[in-house]
Structures are given as structure tokens and as C-alpha cells.
Image 1: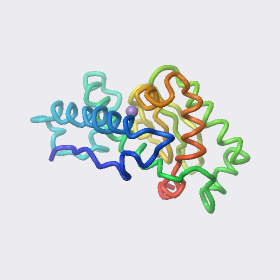
Image 2: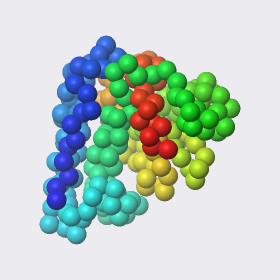
Image 3: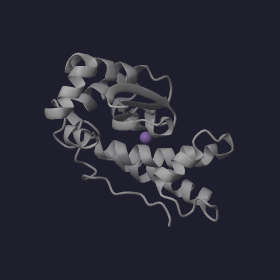
Image 4: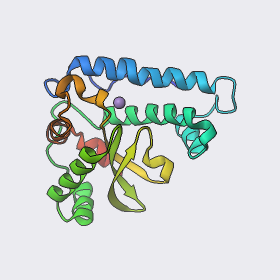
Amino acid sequence: MAITLPDLPYAKDALEPHISAKTLEFHHGKHHNAYVTNLNKLIDGTDLAGADLEGIIKKVAGDTAKAGVFNNAAQVWNHSFYWKCMKPGGGGRPSGALADKINSAFGSFDKFAEEFKTAAATQFGSGWAWLIDDGGKLAIMKTANADLPLAHGKKALLTIDVWEHAYYLDYQNRRPDYIGTFFEKLVNWDFVASNL
Ligand code: MN
């Protein structure tokens, strides 16, 4: 069973003016799609061909001989997750159990926001910043290239893609502006809470 490219959970222009239709056209239609195509080519005819995406990632994580499979599989997972972390009219603040867990882990929502944004801004080169559930406690994590919490036994709750292809058309080199806008205008807190 081949791995397939999931549809975006909203129209290509739904995140404008914060993320343009042009960015999503390339990011989903070209980058994400290429990871799906490459992964299917790499696993075709191997013992990984019938496995689901998370099964593939767990099986090849840490195996340097399978780095190509890991990178493409992880990037398929990361992007599918990232799209769901945003919605038109997102941002604001979480409530309920998620808000309580954030307050208990970070002291306040503002401190959490600062830590998350700093992780995203300081990830050198390509990668991702995450809010994770680490054995019941929330924490911030950043990963390089395709790496993801699943490969480290941790559960992702929220992510931001800080590869340049995620923001360059709209923000050029201003990564902090993209991060601020993502956090204030786009985060889908209902999705984040559903991952708890
Ligand atoms: Mn990306």
C-alpha cells in the first residue's frame, strides 16, 4: 500500500495574508508531494512497502543505512502534521486541560510562547520546533532537517516548519516574523489539544 499525499485541511488561499496560496502551492504541491514520491520509490519492493508511515519511521530511525527512507518518511509525517497545526483565524490562546498543562510546565502561556518562538528562531538551518508531551509533562523540542519527536519516543502536540521553503516567498529572510505570525494568527489550538 503506497503512502499518499493528504489534502490540505483548508483551501490554498485560506491562510492569506499570513501564508500565501503561492507558498502552499509549492510547499504542499511540490515539497510535500516530492517526499511522498521519493518515499514510495525507496520502499517499493522492500519489507517496508506494506507498513504505515509511523511504522516505517520507527523501524528505520537511527539506521544510517536507511537515512534516505527516514528523511522522506519523517518529512511526509512532519508536513501532514504541520498543516493541521494551522487554521484560518487561528492563534489566540488554548483553554481547558491544554492551558493547565502549559501553565504547569512553563509557568505561564507567555513564557511558553517565548520559549517556543526562541526554539524556532534559533534552530540553525533547516528543521522544526515542537511542543511535545514527554512522559506526561509538556516540553519544547527542536529538531534538525527531518528529525521528529516520534524518533525519540516523544509525542508531538504542535510544530512549526522552519525550513526556508516554509516562509521565504512571504517573509524572505525574516524567520522571526513568520514565527510570530504563525503563533499569533494561525495556530489551531483545538488540534493541539486533540493531541494530548
Ligand atoms: Mn516544509
